Length: 194
Image (tube, rainbow, N blue to C red; front, side):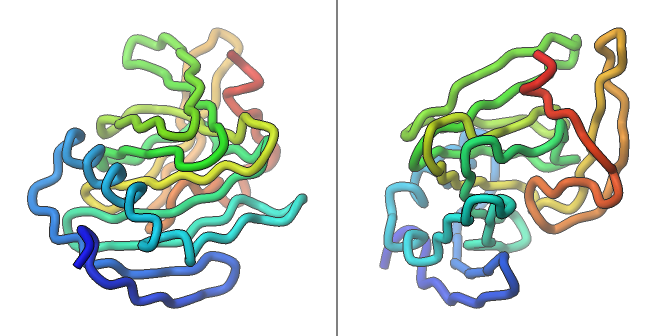
């Protein structure tokens, strides 16, 4: 048996869902990095579930695994696909880029903005409450694996004012990764502001 157990695939609209028995135990940021590393290495666990959006479509994602402690998502991005500045509420996170290139903008608790290139093979973690934005930065599709502990249940989305301070636009209850806030209207992404 691989480190993830057996996959039971279910499809639902444009966002599929697959369930994996994680059997991971207690979750820390370091453990989450280990989870995404193990899932990334086990291509049989996720490659058949992967869908790459057509030009003009939104980002695509599917839940690969979930239990009461952790969940794992597979996302695909085209160049320019982006999230809005957001946090993952009380959930810690880690993500691995398994194909292509993403960029990430992070805002630290003191308000400093940092930009990172996340190439294939890179893995990073985020503490609960960290505000960031992720976007497709390469010339072709990117694929990433994301783990959240506890499973994602709440997110806040942010905007930057003229003085560079962050303000919460909206907080939502959710069980999907990186959703744009419904009805938020046009949103400037952090990549345009740093």
